[in-house]
Image (tube, rainbow over all chains, first blue to last red; front, side):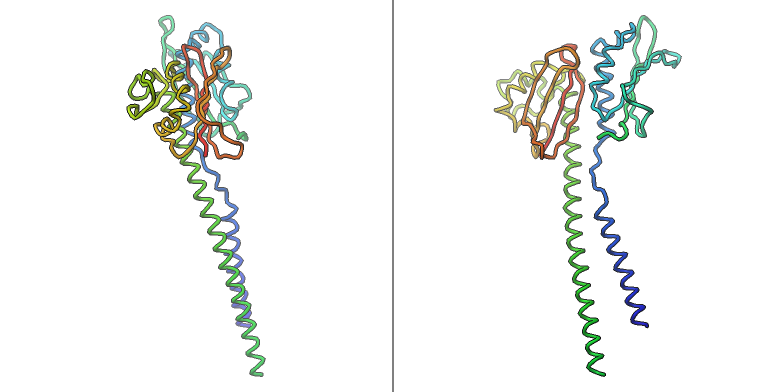
Amino acid sequence: MKAFVMTMDAMVAVSFMLTAMIMLSAMSLEPSAPRGAYMKEMTLDLLSVIEKSGTLGNLMDGNSTGIRSLLEATPDQVCMSVYIANSTGQTIAVIPKNGCGALGSEVQVASRHFVYYGQLYMLKAESWRKEGVG
Amino acid sequence: MGTKKGQIWSLDFTASVVLLTFILLFSLLMWNSLAVRWKTSEGYRQMQTDALFASDALMTTSGRPYSWEMRSQIDNNVSMIGLARTRNELSRMKIEKLVASNASAYDAVKGMLGLGRYELFINITSIGPGSVHYEFGKHAGALNDSVVYERFGLIEGAPVKARVEVWR
């Protein structure tokens, strides 16, 4: 009986060990991209291009075509939104990328200020990773 | 009776040795497989970081010396490669010099971007209307490990997209 109990004990220990090893082996070792850093750089790129290409002036004049084509040119797995706020902090324009829902869990934000006809405004961009893509 | 007891011990011993050998072999194989996967994963992560730094250098810096594109060739006197005049504002002359040096300075350019261990492909195209199309480097095959970063820039005020692909 004693021998049987010891065998059971050993079997349980071996099963535990095998299970642990199988679980470890099946564990996902997918490399995590430096996503935060890349998204931040993309957001800064976008603001820079909006500012230097004249797209910002067009947006302030009511033409958002340029910004929309920039947003649509971002990779599929990236969601972005561009905001313009006035000096009181009130948002006066929001241009989201098509097909993007609510903000994701890790949002990168960048902003800069500009003056338009003597008024101070803020240009802000937010980016996050689209759920379930890539 | 004594002989029978001996046989039971023997069977018991054989069974335990077989089981132990199986467990040891299984553990060794499993450990080896995990070590290979960890190493591959770490290598891929490093490639991602190197590719991001390279894309940043191209899109936000001018290179060193500043007017490296005016030299007859990209040689040891050029220590850094960058395509920008200011952040994201790309110089057409720098891009054209880079593209023209594809055959003669591909390895040197990779080295300057910190990508000596990998292969590199850069593609710059217009966003929206425009006919900008520049390519530098070597295309990745379908089976290669690759990292792609897409960045925005401007050439003479017109938005462009730069696709930087690093692969091995």
